[in-house]
Image 1 (cartoon, rainbow, N blue to C red):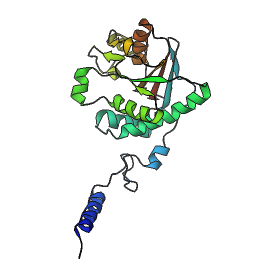
Image 2: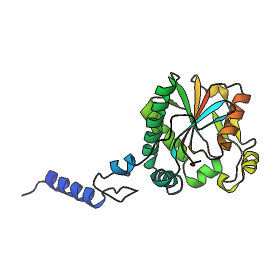
Image 3: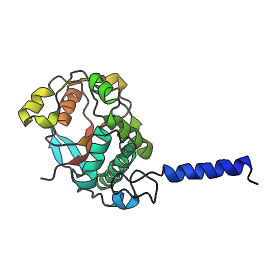
Image 4: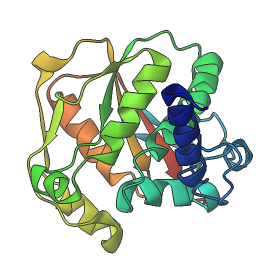
Length: 224
């Protein structure tokens, strides 16, 4: 006769079977994870050379905005797939470790995710880049600091705008509080760097406040 512990164990196994996680990318449930090893290994790292320079600040992009990386970004950003934040952070950290080794970087960073305006964050329910930043800091040991920069202007979605419109859209969009800085270098992180206008705007307000040591890291950029 089965005891209560045996019944609970069987019930839990049944729940695990019924609610087994499927890979968001290929649908496999073999590993019961949101992104299986096979799909993660299909992600391709970009060159460790900086993607571009913005006012003397190096901008690095971990991969190209396509295939699984594109689906990952859209999933966490628009479809509430918050668990994908870990995989994006892992991808960015594994890339950035290569950059650190190549460039011999020894800095300790305040990691600053690109902020959302409070109205947009309330509407979406979360800032996806803060979720990524939390996981990135768990992996790297760096300091998550979302208090340094706040978005104080409600801006239009950037993808609909031309480069000049993006610059105007982001004018006076951010406010910096340098008293919140705890590390010697600020690391700005975002999901995709297209025109670079968001990073450019944040770099400007930081430099206007006397912050000189800045690095930017995006999960992806378009292939040029």
